[in-house]
Length: 155
Image 1: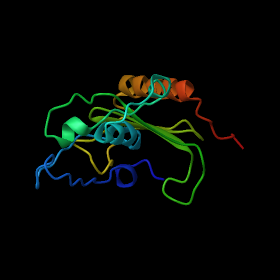
Image 2 (image 1 turned 45 degrees about the horizontal axis):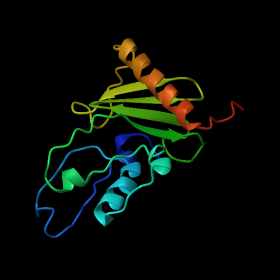
Image 3 (image 1 turned 90 degrees about the horizontal axis):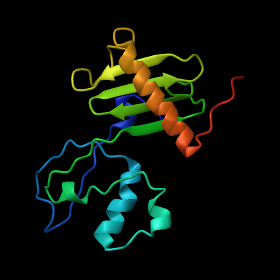
Image 4 (image 1 turned 60 degrees about the vertical axis):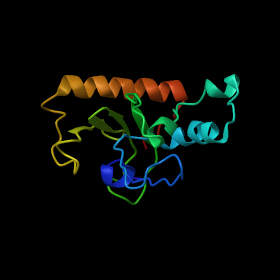
């Protein structure tokens, strides 16, 4: 429930004898929506076209096999509710490549981070790079609209 890397960056371990090699690592960013197409591929199941069109995830099976795979699509998060964690206000985020933007819905505040140099997210670059921040914010807003994401009330 937290949009900083300490809340959304978690390790994933896989053991698949005959496919994955013990002791290997992969630093590709995956999202929970990638599990469905991956498990379907592993099981040899076909996802019906009418279902597939609504799935944002992509299979990570090539990564498990040690193959290179292009995974350059943005990853989105949407937390439109108040909670007791830091920060407690409704927010959304987009990660695109090395960049992550967090948008706080209550006051419109933006935080922009370049993750390879700032994994702890201590250096907000939104004021120094307003064009990049606005471009990511626009993509985040377009994604919210495309999925019909509900926004919090402004009470």
